[in-house]
Image (cartoon, rainbow over all chains, first blue to last red):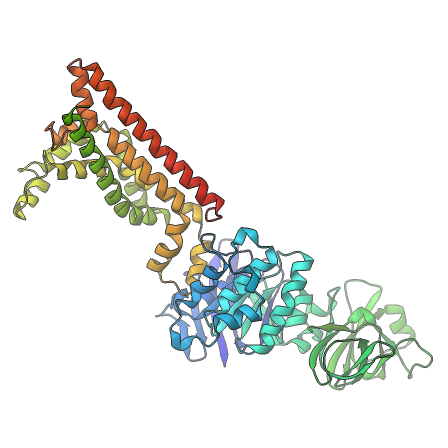
Length: 357
Length: 227
């Protein structure tokens, strides 16, 4: 199952040239700075750019090639626009039903009630767009797109125009969506934190070209990419809840490299979650540290060292039980510890963020 | 008011209603096409549609008379189909009024369609609505105010027209004599009392119409259905 893209589109100040395949499972983050062509690519996939040339195929369906152009309304995609795009002449229920009514009964796998429950829309149904908050509008827009039972859901920075609270309100819904529905999602964003939290796969765009694509974990640590130098750069791990510690209000989760203590989580034992370790929260020790306040210590091996934009800092790429882990330390420390690739040492993790619960 | 005036008034109302309804049906797709892009053809059509705004009504009426008369192109075609030529008939008045009021329907509609912007239509397309479906279920409801404005302007403009109606219709009571022509007859015959009664009726009618429209507009906006 893939989305095969070979798209070109020329504009006066900008040209898009993309040739790649995107897996159609889970969430694929379309990441890049503003102006890198993320939205344009998404619009090409949706069939909203008539002047795009090339070939777009989703599994066995050809959406566009030299002879065909399947118009947007026949592509079976869902699209969530960046800004609120609810129809002003319909209430929330009318908006939600707009797409659903146009889907043949046989294709309606996701029902109205299911989506309303999933996105917690019950109370909003009789209201109109102007009465809703930004976050609520986007939730409705997501539900409306979902109800067309798309084969592919396209989201163009759905939370970027929202305030922190609305963002915090929507992201858990998106995680739930990823976990419970089988609809693959292409998620455009310029916020690395969002992508780290949601995406399984990453497509990095630069100046209208694909710079790199691959699984999220790998992409975050790759030495030829700028991602690991981002201020909020770091590593993500899939983890399982192993134990709760009532006395110290901690929860222990297991990742490949070992066991991590995190703040007490309401999740059940055995639940899966994603944890994130920022590069700036990882320090290094040559021996097993003793008498330290740091709880989380993982054995690791140095893959390479590189310098970022800040001349005082060194970014150390580690491997912990086969998974990439990034540490940002001072250049002086790196010199004093005489760090070189291949060295075995211990990573002390000061902070672990739980994503998605 | 005399029975002749009442008949003329009734004829005017029928003419204005029928013209407005038919004109909206014709203008909506035309305005849509004009709103959806820019090209040389569109510019020419745009100018043609606006022509009745600047053309003396008598000029329009004169050429229509030539076309609609039994020997004219359209009149001849009507006769070939076994119908009477539309000159000096109610049908002729409707045709003339539609042409004369065309810009009053097309311009508000075109502005309304342009005001919607591309986004709601793109949204509708991603929600599986085909082009015609998008027009009916998104563009039209979002343009309600423009449609209302167009309807009122057409109605009022048709009610008040004089030159075109006189040229095409003549002045046949019960068939082509409209209220504005009846009014002119009264004034010419120095029947100022009758002219006054008819004028006041028309004035009240127009004011009432505007009241209804403004009220409807306000309700639409209050309900959140309009931006």
